[in-house]
Image (cartoon, rainbow, N blue to C red):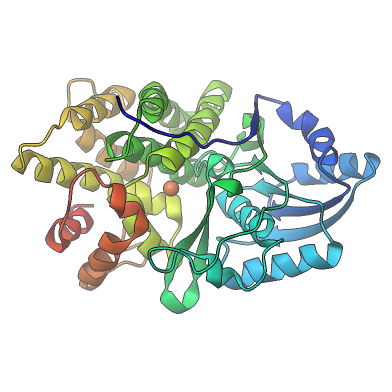
Length: 379
Ligand SMILES: [Fe+2]
């Protein structure tokens, strides 16, 4: 019998129009609210009005891009001046990661850098965090369900996680309507991130019965929903992607990921968008992982399942799903690695760093630098 533990948000409210309950849920946690918001989230103004009517006072921090050490330090000082009771993040994965880091570090002494996974383990352990509510407005990272915040460390040109089971949000409030009408490029990159997270969680070496169930039920539906959204706006497909994103967060928090996210932490540390990197690397990573596993006469059943889900979801049943994924990302103009600022001369150093990244520890098979360079070359 496989033994496992499960980490998930303390509470989840999922549903179209569930945002109507947000102000009451937040006010129940405190009256001094640090609100972290993405730049283009219009609904936040409605939330601020409702919080004011509930007797809350707010300080607002705008999240502009994926958080780095300085962004976390600045937001913590705003929270401390305010003497915040709770932290609320409304936005994409970057805003939620910033909120998670601020809530996590608020009651802890010292600098954020001392708590990151710089080596095998962080130098210090967090004190208990402030209450934290995550309200995602993109369907991709699943950050509303994970126990880590990804922080950019500019001097190392990489991203490193702040990780602790207590960082999982006290409440994940997921309203798919907040993603309605998102631009096609954002929908594609975010959706591919969720799908990559589900697939890497499913084939990784730490999958467990719960993550298997979540991934098996979500991957086929998410692939079909994302294809649908590339053709036309559709409420049911938005609902499906919001659910897939949330479940991908639970899956990755409890199983692990693989080489795609290992490489994404390196390439993303140089400024490229996370979802686009993962979507661009997924097909070649599946191919190389399966190839290495085949040579070792390992069990490739899960890779064959994923290939079939891709073929069916992308409407080329019976064909090669991996190839269908390549055609899908190209046809929908996902940026290439070169577009993302990665040149062939950098493949080897990126591969070496990617192999050492924490996400790569759960890759289903041991890869070497040549294998990882192939992942980069075959995109
Ligand atoms: Fe991701």
